[in-house]
Length: 259
Image 1 (cartoon, rainbow, N blue to C red):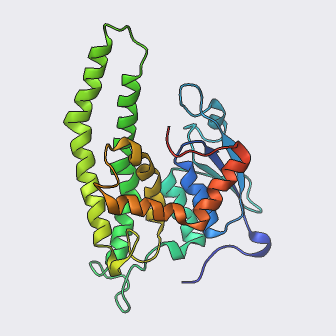
Image 2: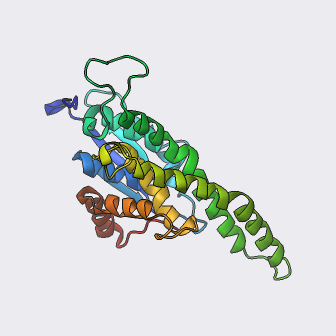
């Protein structure tokens, strides 16, 4: 399908507000994958691991990613937040190649006739944030509970609380999700190497951040879920991904995927 991206003097200007160790790196990778010119503004986390207060000047939530879109002739820029919303917005105009074909030939607009690749794409775009990412965040919280500066005689209680969360909730849920993801890769349409088939999709980009975190937070190993680990390796081998990492190294001096 042909791109509907603006051309000539009507081209908008994009600015990505990027925060270290955050969901925003997916959007930087997306810009590189799509070849969209952009300006990059980087931010560091506070000593508490939070987004810095100056991000509130960009968007009321004070989070990252945020993309500002300056459109020629418009009174003010469009401000986009939330990774999936930004990704879908950019793909609508520039990234049709990252969205699987929705209908087979002759079946356009017919409910129930969607391709398996597109159905997976639509679900996984939202699964990344709605299902698996909350587990990664909870794992981070339990780690911080364990590392919290409390008196030595309270430390066993603190560790016990964190351990109970891990054993009664996180471990069993991580297994459910990693079994699911391993199965999705094993049954990728047309024997593909990506979640939705042979070609990378925006859903793969969305999944990259939680699965990067999962290499250290899930408690699993490459041997237990070889397809998931190999999949993350394939994502990191993308030239556009490597360009996005190199850009951060040039600006910040280093790049890391998890806290």
